[in-house]
Image (tube, rainbow, N blue to C red):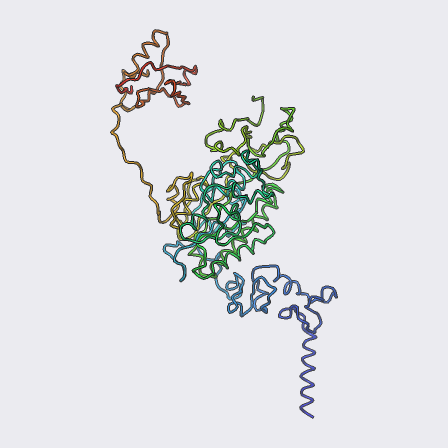
Length: 594
């Protein structure tokens, strides 16, 4: 009777309801009936629901919640979940609370001066994250900042410089390893992305096995400094971090694989932060290949680079949302950085050596900045004669002859060997504007809303040591030079105590009207007499007293002193002729400044 009829009606109603279902929400990959399907076969059969892509396919590909995903079923195929039970299962997407629960996102919050330690329980020391965006030219943020809301907010709220100066040459491996060690390339050994070691008769490239040979890597990278002093380190990519430098790897690290999605790198880092306190690292590195890759392919002034910049901005946003969801956004110290800038490549701005030499195939050329004829756009140097500011001579891996290129110019042996005829390149003089890099410091250790003058990237190693309360290994930086970036300087430089009283030489301001402009030092009477006999006259504006009483005349020009022969040369714009005086004897009296 009536019971049978009721059951029949219920079943019929359920059947009709299923037939009327036209959405995949809550039905993904399940064998269900309806006017459309949501299982894997529906694609081949052509009867998928209209929202199959949004409900079932996208969650496997994306790492964030959308309004549509909120309330979905928790499925193992998804990178993260937006289901109602994701908190219980500890697999929520990083923006779950802001998208599905209506809480404020990190980007929507106002800048906050993090005046005190706001780390949650279990974090006794603020972690440090060194995050590199390869090839992020300093100018990008100034030009495209409105398209980069996350990075722009970090700049606004933290400590920022308009340009971070890379080391020379402005290449990826030398600069990343200089940032990690505080050493110039001539000191840490990675003098280029491609180099030859004559002692070992070995060649290093980014694609051969020598890249993993620790004999190329000198110095002590920051992850080892931390480990040697009782802290733990983790690296999701950084040049040298997957090499057993000094016989050690970071506590946690990944072998380099550029195919790993940027989002997965950030999510892995966030999971490392959730490790038990006794296992959790204190120092971390992250690395993204963009916008360098797009810059090389399409050039720094291209729509593709803009898209790459927007992409990395979203990845940094993923990081900040994840930190906020874990209540760590005001706990961790973040250094957002790049290794170098990018220059526009032009086939017409290339020097080919075969135009100057006939045997160019016998030469080995390391691409990068490296006898003068009219309109020649390069200078050839012996490495020891390069400008000292490059710090690029004291290593046998540096080629003996080096070609220094004008801005925007490249060098190749023959036209077929030019790597970047279009697109972009780097490696030029590290003071060129387009080679300048990105630096932003954000967190409880950094000053609030502060812009500082440009500085060299070798100083960052000491900065990280200070943030972690570590004693730095020997390096080329000046410890304490970045104290003005920090809220609390842990190291205060001590200057040597004065051991002797000032010399009795008069200051330039004490000259009398009768002194004239001659260099008249009492201790040079004999020399002056000798010059007078020879018919020579020495008339230069400034006299500088030296301890052994050798007075050197300077007029804002170069000085050349030959100590073995105890002689000097004074160069003057008034008297361009070089004048060499041989000191006949060493005097006991001090000299007077006119």
